[in-house]
Length: 264
Image (cartoon, rainbow, N blue to C red):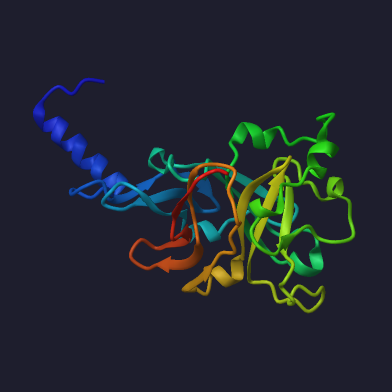
């Protein structure tokens, strides 16, 4: 598309700057992925860059109205969110957001209405290929990565074969084995960090957050447990946070404190 005159060009550049949140100085700014419908509102990814153009934080922003008009019981929802182009130096390819109106298994732990937000290291094509119809599905589920590539302390839930734990389109979920609060019938689920693996690779970090807790407009930050080594070059987070942006009227779930890691 060609711009017909200078005034139109200036207007277009100004609009682009406002949309991306880009700083006029250096390369710093906050940049957004495509907005998608969620409930009565919208949801989108973002990345924040420092003055050197390096990522410091990635996350998801949900408009306040996104928590209203969500599908009812019996109608779980998945929204695939592309990352902005400016996030290409991070480890993450996309975010898979799931709305679970009645929670999910194991119900004694996670049976409350909540959101799952998979910050995926593998791409969408690879996610769709995690399919029980794959003749190698069981082999890939059982192929766990070297422990050094998995966040410290995270393990597969006991008592079931990995094939049974593998979720199509996601992979195998890991829980923090040192979390003594995870007792069925006693656990008060509001928020938790899950991690994921598939076919020998560490594939996602997943904040799980209840709708009721989000509605309290929390301000929360917590360090992430980290692997000893990494399988893919990129900027990885060291903490995660949840807050409500009063100015934008948006719920923000982020993974930040990004640090460059080299595959080894």
